[in-house]
Length: 167
Image (cartoon, rainbow, N blue to C red; front, side, top):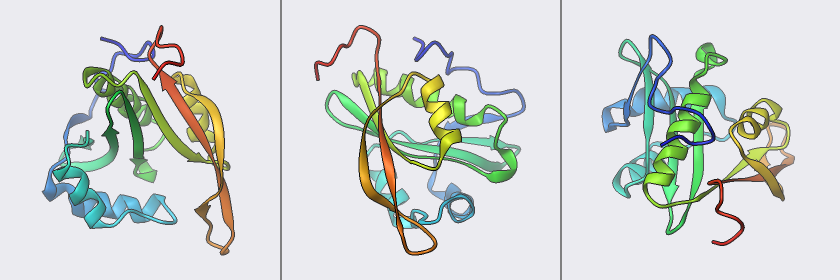
């Protein structure tokens, strides 16, 4: 099965993908601190690991360089976290992880996937649009900023072709 026209079974050359394990957390937390102003803590990942969320990681050698977190709900899912280490960005890993997560959503019967993305994160927005997501709304003052202000988030949705608006 393909999600948004992308074959999620093929990891970019030189990389390996597998489910997240507890022993990956030190590397994941390092990436979190590197790429997010308000990073997830260890407990958030431990909770995701124990609640059955979909948690793929991408590795080069034994180093975690990217990961995603997808919460499966009844007939929809929410992409909660997608992170690539700064030194490994722009190599197709984000696209691979999104496609992998969309395929997982479909396997679990979720024909819609939602996410929030910072209004200023135009690169992520472009990736999500390329993968078939549309902006369907906004969340005012959703994200904290380093200067103490708040930034809006765009609410985006991906739907399986033929799903329509029925949920």
